[in-house]
Length: 173
Ligand SMILES: CC(C)(COP(=O)(O)OP(=O)(O)OC[C@H]1O[C@@H](n2cnc3c(N)ncnc32)[C@H](O)[C@@H]1OP(=O)(O)O)[C@@H](O)C(=O)NCCC(=O)NCCS
Figure (tube, rainbow, N blue to C red):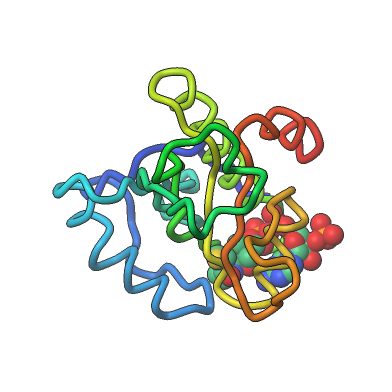
């Protein structure tokens, strides 16, 4: 396996995103066209894993969010305000050439660790994600995420309580 850098904030001047191909053109285009713009506007932060040549092989975008109490699963509700404070993992994609090497898991673990840090500084009850499709939903569940609506497979929203992240990270590392 080629040498990889640790997750780092996207630096448009340094990181090469031109050939990024996750197999999902919408996610690839977002990295190229909108990641920098969202960072400048403080609406989403993009973290990347790059190879030794600074070519991006994976990225994740994150932003603060709030979960409406009316939509929150019971396990997120107890004693929580409306909305429930959370971290949104908006997008996560790995270049096909690096698929299956644990890079996606490593980047997801990095975002989970970020939620733990944020929770200490500002309170963050959960990480939430909307899976791209059914297959991705299974991928998130493998990492410990639970569906908002377990009985409706068509619903792709999932969450992981911050209090469960340490245990989850011990399992995936
Ligand atoms: C889903 C994705 C992020 C996985 O990244 P990755 O680096 O290949 O995954 P990892 O190497 O960390 O994990 C590999 C494991 O996940 C499984 N896996 C990989 N892609 C999967 C998918 N789409 N659905 C279910 N399982 C998947 C592999 O079979 C492997 O399982 P194993 O450890 O039992 O062998 C990547 O395939 C991707 O970018 N897909 C397109 C975009 C997408 O679906 N993003 C999810 C965001 S909602």
